[in-house]
Length: 381
Image 1 (cartoon, rainbow, N blue to C red):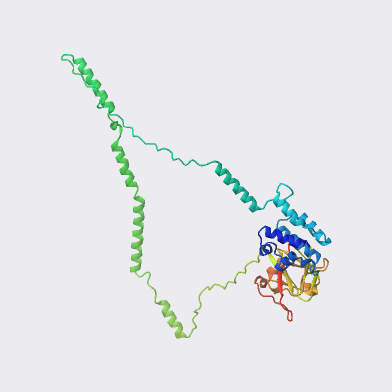
Image 2 (tube, one colour):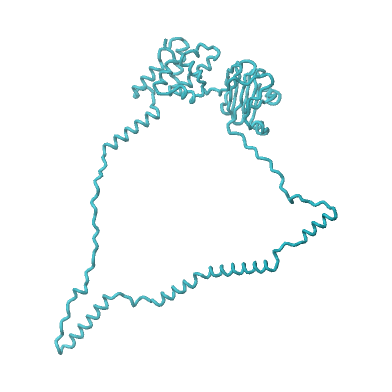
């Protein structure tokens, strides 16, 4: 006979998930998940219809099944005409992504993008041919001095031509010589000497000051300025002879500092324990879940409820006990009951003023009351 639990187990196996991974994601007890898959949760009337639907919807959301499909499947299951709605929807959405509202998982998207990147990378091969090396050539300036035209011998008697050739030769030789006469080497040496003279002045001054300090300290030490006086010893001996009591306590001893107690955690957990009878149900409101939801807690079971600043409890007050970090909250009806709204209200300020709640201990139950058989967290739905 088809059932919604068998389809959930089938989809979980198809996604390659274990029942422990579903339990870690939904915080639903492992026994409850097993009862969902084998269908016995519908036979246990003690769970209640609200809890059953909440557990199955949380299970389905962990498998990324749409909430509308889960609600329709639950309605079919309750009327007895369930016909593999979840599996058919999963199979059609997984095999035909273009139809329906099915969305790919993160892992599917990542693998799809990886394949696309690899395909693009293969379409454009990288050219690994090394580039030709360029040989560097050095340019050498030709020696113009060797290519100068030789001077022609002047004819005797032509003194003007000889003089002009001599003047031209002097001009050419003077133009090829470096302009070393323009550099004032004497001035540069003078500046270098002045910079060397100015540099060590600060260092010399510091050395002189250190020498003077050492000399002064040596003089004071030799003159007995640092030697201890015998007057305190004689004063002590005189006090002992007179029989007076010496004050040997340390002067200005600091007062002991009390240890600083750390603040409470940002998220606090209040434990509601069905100590005497089944809570059928107990309603809890907190600033983490601002809605007065009902919770059915079996006798001997404790349930943790998270909050930051305020939490409210309404139900069979005579059948429950309240704990914070294992410490019993005594007489909550006398100190924390809101008569007008008919609920117990606890705030962070109450637990902050009493540092005993900051340390976790085992459950401090009253005399004659056993500790809880199991402690669970409230279901998320």
